[in-house]
Length: 189
Ligand code: HEC
Image (cartoon, rainbow, N blue to C red; front, side, top):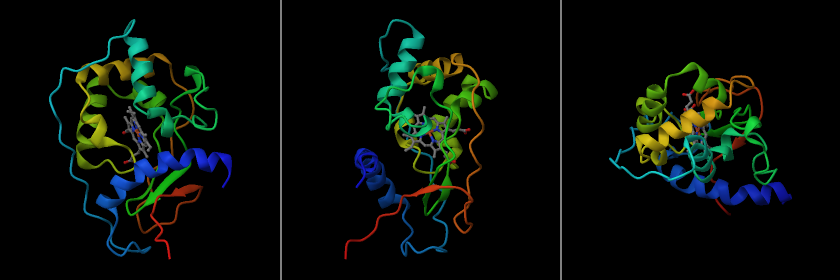
């Protein structure tokens, strides 16, 4: 196993285990019927929030420990978290493939310029009204307080527009064009 693959493995496992149990189509076979639409995750009212030297510091802290860079920042893991803020959150054109089709981590630098802060909160607390797909950890962001969600938005927006939009998600029965990571458990025989 390459060093990079070894480094990504714990992330992949942590993400895969809960997701796979919930989203894996019974047959797991290609061409299997798409799983039922994911329900919106539960939202727990909380006033919990981080204390930091300003909103920007809070946003940087929250996105880092919240794992947002892991998927939305290219080479975050490979650089051991050394990617400077100016280069973060530009999304990825390497998809994640599973029973949900292929999804691509959005370019959050462009999204925060395009969408309002209220829309950001709505999307992150409702899994985009139940339309959001794995492996985006919607069930985790749904538990964050409005204050912390808004701090993340303001921080990412303050970094300015950068990069291109990520490719559109590909439905389960279509073949994606570019690269993707297979997020499907393989049974050990
Ligand atoms: C395991 C990878 C992963 C992690 C970790 C992750 N995301 Fe995502 N995110 C995605 C993917 C993939 C999508 C696209 C989902 C889809 O197409 O349904 C997405 C979508 C989004 C969207 C919706 C974008 C839009 O245009 O509607 C927002 C906002 C978002 N992520 C923010 C975050 C934040 C904030 C964090 C950290 C708390 C985070 N993500 C952590 C993979 C991830």
